[in-house]
Image 1 (cartoon, rainbow, N blue to C red):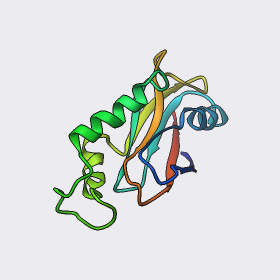
Image 2: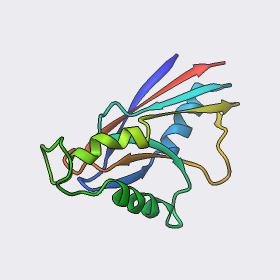
Image 3: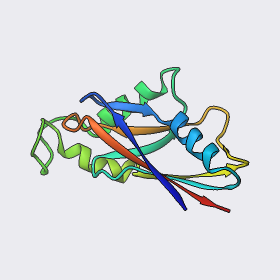
Length: 135
């Protein structure tokens, strides 16, 4: 298995950050057929396969804002207002995805992208672990 860590700066704001290019580069360098596992080792972030651009990323943030409002309802209450919602996020947007790789290329659908989803404005620096298991 080959593995690397990609660092992502979310800028201290809610973010849907496209990491498709990083995943593609890693899969191409690993070469061949296999599985690419994408993992965010944070208790307050997730990985989504979603169409990006054309407003879908903003729609996802809006939907998560409706589902997980940044208010004072959360029992986990340290950090910025509504921080507890960030700890619920990985139950909805899991912190991992496993993608097929064929001939060194991600086998994504036409409009699918790989995104880091992060509602935690208290932690602007994230890591994403990419691991490739050859078939």
